[in-house]
Image (cartoon, rainbow, N blue to C red; front, top):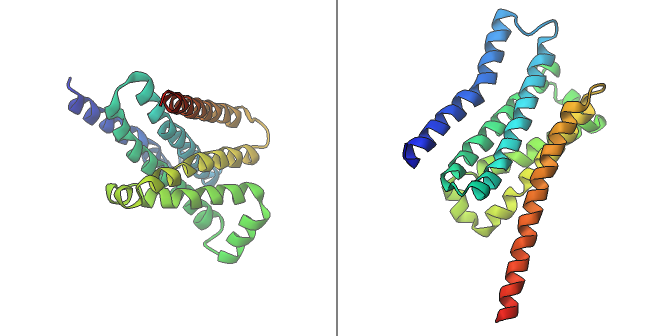
Length: 206
């Protein structure tokens, strides 16, 4: 299989996998599969899917560098957009089904509940990243695009904190996701240090 077919196959798997949670939730909502508290189930699954997709998005560049297979980078944009999609659905469930789109209640919750504050902040950070993910914006922003999109690490961190503060008893899953994020952070820091050393070495030679 050539690279073009391989990337098309991966994109097909990505779309099917990313849409599976939404399909299951929609079916569950109509066929009463979501248990005694369907709103809580909807909120939990969409939030978890957002976090997992964010971490997978952040994993694309390390995978490309470690494997040397550059076409995998083409999966990063759709993964990021799917993460944003689920973040919006997650927010919409809270705003609509939980708060009834009552702005006064929503603002009060965002201000008074720390876990909602950090979750909402993460969504705010993801919004310009989704908007500027097109090739046109990459050209317009130039180097600033890279700087702007580093905010995804902040959004992912806030998302993990949001999940940790929300879970009151069993914190193993949020801690596992936090550990995955730490590994990704560590890899990025290590590569940045390596680049600086390489540049310093080239400067010394000249």
